[in-house]
Length: 133
Image: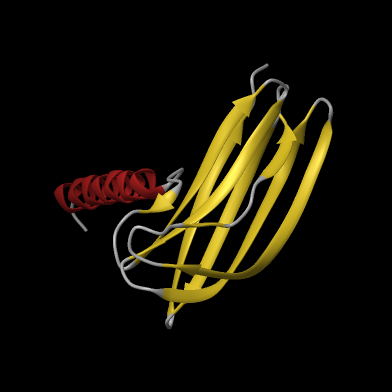
């Protein structure tokens, strides 16, 4: 391999790393799937010393399915590990709220994962949330 070939290989590898990092960054931290007939979202609101979490499902047609949501993390006041799931129904203009959860906010950080399955399709939403310090 010549010096020119080595430089080309190194430059190509560096370019590939930038492309992969950009693609990963484009999807990392997103709170929902925002296209397709089945979509999800993780809403979060800080109220006082609590973070309220609400997973939501959207559908382009009337559909029923199942979901699982997990929350893990914590802060100075302790940690949380929550896992729940169940059935839902959603349709056009009728999003399905999958309940609400409350976790401590003071300096805490949580990973929230939602997986929704309906009509032979699965979508996932992942969001990192944090409370005020």
